[in-house]
Each structure stands twice: as C-alpha cells, then as structure tokens.
Image (cartoon, rainbow, N blue to C red; front, side, top):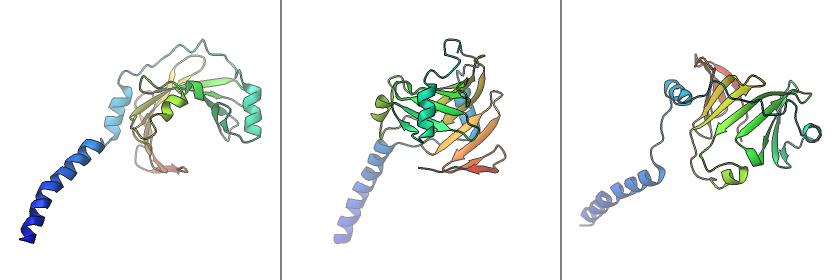
Length: 192
C-alpha cells in the first residue's frame, strides 16, 4: 500500500515540479552562429550621424587622472584602458553609449547598446539584477564618418558573438574562451 501511495504522489507531483520549473525558468534559446547573425543584422543601421559628438574627450583631464590612479570604476563612469593607450568610457547616466578615445583624447568610435526601452542609466539597469535582458545588440560606429565597424550580440552573461559589417564572424566567446569562425581558440579572458 505504501508503494502505491508513493507512486501516486510521484505521478502527481513530478509533472507539477517540471511544469513549475518551465514557467519560472522558461526554455533558453540555443544560439548558433547563423541564428546570431540573423538576429544581430535584423534592422541594423550601417551608418549613424555622429557629428554632434565632440571630437575630443570633454572629460579628458579627469579620465586621465582616474586612469593614472587606476580607478577604473567610479565617479559616475567605467573606464577600460587598452595596451595601446586608447581608452573607453561608459558613463552611468548614459550606459547605452561607450566612447573610445586615443591616448590624446581624440574620439575614435562610439558603441551603442540596445537595451530594453526602459533602461537608460546604470540605476535602471541595476533594477534588472536577476532578470534576463538578453539578447543585447551593440553596434560600433567609427568617428567621424559614422560607418559601422562591428556588431556584437550578447546572448547571456557568458556568451557573445561578434561580426564584421559584411556579416563575417569575428569571434564567438563562451565563458572565458573566444573562438574564430573555424572554432579555433583565439584567446582567453578573465571571467568575473
């Protein structure tokens, strides 16, 4: 009798547990290079007007001072320093844009990330702490001509695809490993 009771309980509750998981977690999409390429180039703009941006970093002295002090996150911005001396800045009040400058503060390019329509600042983004906002598209345009240089499709916290404007895959990163179009390891990166 106990065995029958346990079987009945399992028959009733296992489908419920499975159903609850499906409702809560959903089914994650499995991305391929082709599906990522199709998604990232859907409605892609090959040119944007960047003429209204200043040709030089308006916060050059402050940004250089922060770089010299190795304070890359704070004072309302996140800075990335490249080995070439170039640096990128994402301001918390305009997180959808990243500006890349050369070592002298001349604007090289601008990246635009298409967040959901109600995310404009880092504070807005922080509200989504545990929610899925992927896939995210980032378009990189050169300055001053505004031509597209590349497109990145972030499909999760740990996976992204990068393409050239001609739709050629540059790299596919999964976790700390990045691969080329032939699935050869290009480099590894530190995951947080």
